[in-house]
Structures are given as structure tokens and as C-alpha cells.
Image (tube, rainbow, N blue to C red; front, top):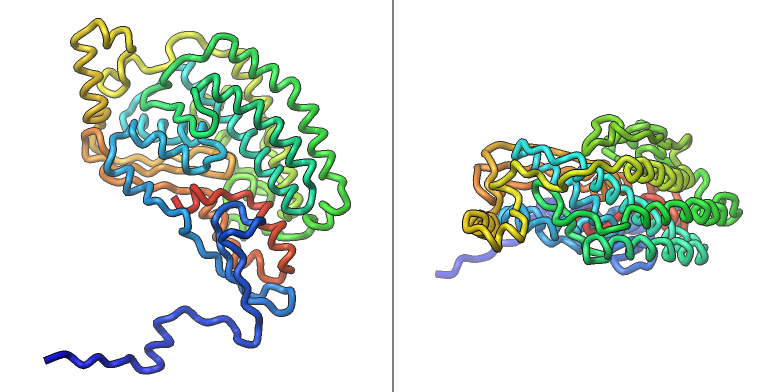
Length: 410
């Protein structure tokens, strides 16, 4: 006999759904394809006139299950997937992931490898901030900034292509080192870029820093207090813009960052303008680091020679030695063999702190991986930050947070 279906009572049914917005107020959905959202983010607003009274961010439109994917492939096979996190700074993502796995393997890469990784990570920081700056300019009506910024990014992409063979998704990392050494004359071309970039950066910033319209759209808008920035787990320029001088490159140096002199820019009020200023100054500090790294670039190998069971042997040895051929076959098919254990490593990426938590039960595949994405944590403050602002101010607030949904949704 068929079981009769009974509807729940009204109270139970109401409790099973999220609290509805006030019916006396207007409900407005921004996104997921709104031009002012930096990726496929949707925000459901409740409005009293043009004032936001409630904001509910809806994420997940770009969810691909990266963490579960990582548990079904070898450590090196996951490197290209890190390109798709903050896809504006893949070189920095590659570096953070490689260091996390190397710490799991208790492996130290040579000084030359560390210095090259620092150079590429800082170039990626400049590239990502240029993109954020250009998009922010368009958000608030300054088209020229976008054109200037993209011309400089194009110069960087040419350098990336020379180094990695790709412009956008670089995959320039291996567990235990790098896939190849620097091309001949590459550091000189990097220095030449830095030399011409600083005057152009000053010109780009001058288009906004004293622009009346830009000041009206950003000063005292989207203020994040120091306490709120810490409480909501903000990192990167969004945290430093609120006056918190926290930078992992200084506080917990990795890859030899302790060897370089640079300053950590911080804001005073924590508004949209402060966050913009922090990113502008961070690009100048990145140039400062790059110049130091290229000036004292160590010689030697770009991969750890003692990592025979982890790093693939050179191609000439694979073609001439049976032992190396077998070793390469095992690394490719089974993955680099890792000891059992767990590790958490986080790096100071352009958007903030990117962390990888890896649990290994031995073998060539991680048993569990968790990615701490800075954009996801930075967006957590939106329900509080948007309330009380005009709808038009939300556009400025989103641009100032400079998030990427690729790493937010993962």
C-alpha cells in the first residue's frame, strides 16, 4: 500500500528555509554576470531606497572540486590545477604549492631555485595588481588606467612566455625544483622591464590618486576597521589597508625572503582608497625585491639533486641510463613518493595568504588536501561591509577587495 505523504506544518516549513528579506523593502540581485563583479559572484541585496540594508553573497558558480581532484592524482600532476586558483598570478600559486609538498618531503631546494621562485612570484604580484588596478579603474569610470595597466601586463606576459612557454597558465614548478633554468639574458630583460616600469607606474597612479571623481568614489567608502579585518580573517592588501602590518614574507620568511630588503605598506583608515594605495606601493616594493634577487642570483642547480625519488632526472640521463629511465617511469606513473604525515604551508600571494594543508599516508598521491583561499576569506566580510552603503558604492567596495572567484570557489 502506498505511503501517504504529509506536508510539514507551517512552522517547520518556515524554519527549513533561510530567513526571507523584508517584504517592505526591495530585493536586488547583483551578478553573477554583472560587469562590476570580478568573476562569477552574486550578491543578493535588500534595499531601502538606494541604501543596502542586507547583503548575502552567493558563491560557488566556479566550483570545480580542486581539493578532491588533488586526491586522485600525483603531486606533480596537480601543479597545473594551481594555475586556475588565482589565475592572475599562477606563478605565485605554483610556488606556494611546491613549497608545501617539499616541506612534507622534508626537502630543501637549492638557493638558485629559491631566488628564481622569488623573482617569478614578485613578477606575478605586479601582474595581478596591475589587473586589479585596471579593472578597478573601469569600475569607477577611469578607462585610461586599464589601457596603461594592460600594456605593462603584456610586457610581463612576454617574459612569462620566454620562461615557461605559456602566458597565462604557466605550471612553472615541480616538486623539488623547477622544470628548466632561466633562458639566456632573461634576468637582463627583467631588469630592463623594472627600469621602465617605475616611471609608468607613477604615471598610472597619478591618474587616480588626485582624481576628484576617484576620491569621491573611494575615500571613506567601505571602511574596514583594524578589529574587523582581523576578526574576519582578511589577509594581504585588504588587511594591511586597515593598518595591520602583517606580511608572511617578513613574519615567516620562505624561499629566502629574509635576504631581501623591502617595506610593508599599510593604510590609515581602511577605506577603499587605502587599499588602492597599498597595492600601488606593493608593486614598487616588488620591483625592489626583484632587483635585489637578479643582482645576486646564485649559480648552481635549479632542482634538488638529492631528491632522486621525487624530482624527474634530466632528459639526457633518461635517454642514456636504464636506471634513470626506470626512475623517471616510476615518478611519472606513481608520482613522487612522499612519507606519511601532514603539513600546512601558506604564502603571501597577491590576494592574501594562500595556504595548502596536505595529509599523506605515503605514496605518490595525497590522502587529503585543503586549500585556504584568500579571496574566499576576504569576501566573508561583505555582509557587514556593504550594509549602510549606496548600491553604487558596492561597486567601489568590490573593486577595492580585488578578489578572484577561481580561488574563492576552487
